[in-house]
Image (cartoon, rainbow, N blue to C red; front, top):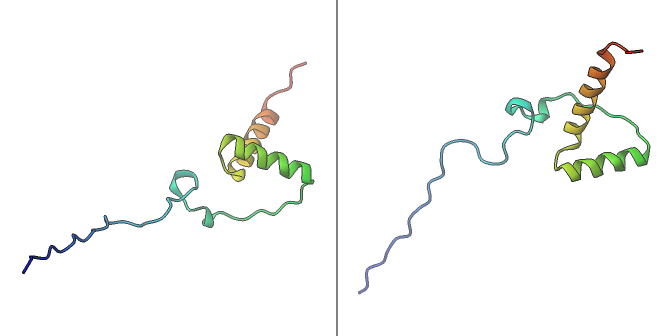
Amino acid sequence: MPHRVQPKLRVKPAGRGGRPPAGFNGEPTSKYPQLAARVPPATLESLRALAMHERRSMWRILVDAVEIYARRERQPTRQ
């Protein structure tokens, strides 16, 4: 009678499965406050296209845009 070989069981490494948190410093984005804004369709399409082109999420593009805008507004005007 032939000897049967038992298949080896895979042992999962300790820790959580799934995707890692996508927020800043490893925070889950589900903990972030939500923002709803109405924008013209062309603006939304521009945001989507930019996000796809840069391979980044739309919220990260918006965060960068707000930071750049705030930095520009804080600079003294030169005349």
